Length: 284
Image: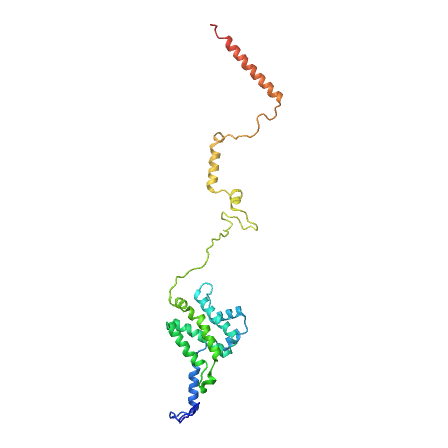
């Protein structure tokens, strides 16, 4: 027989199952209570390690613990890491104990796990949270008072935090888990011209490079076609070559007197030719 206690006095003794004692019942209830939010999302050693880190250190350690490797290209991993980092930093401001850290982080993880695997709606998630908080939160039953992980103030704060961090953005998390997205490759293609062996048309690597125009004009050896065209020009002979033009002034080296003398001589020759032509014509 077992006997309980109420604020108005002892309750009538009730039958106790055969082969059990009040102590064994208490152990069974304790074991059932321990199964709540188990297994732990983070171990005690991991939580202790995180408590020694700053904000950047917490993010890096959680990335390692949760095995997120593609934060720069995987938006889902980046969102989940931000979700857990924000939750841990909020818990640190609440000055939780290690066991409270463990249960709170496991609570955050299971809420997402229910959404991802069970497709739990927002209403169902709120009901589930209420049931869990009733088990790990404050309880007016005297026999389970020692099992209370969070007091009334902490439990209300946890509910308020989950409301603004997860429930208000529930549709976005549903979209993240359920909606197929096109894989976007973020990157840049660059064409790099490498130096070819010395036998090719490119020069050896230089300590100080020069532009391609200068190299092709003054340094690059002539191609086979250029050599054939040059040889053909030489076979055609100098008579077919174009005369070279000179920019030298033809009057260079003559004085003004020399020019006047030449002009007078040319003028006299012209006048004499006209007179001779006029004298040879018959008169009318």
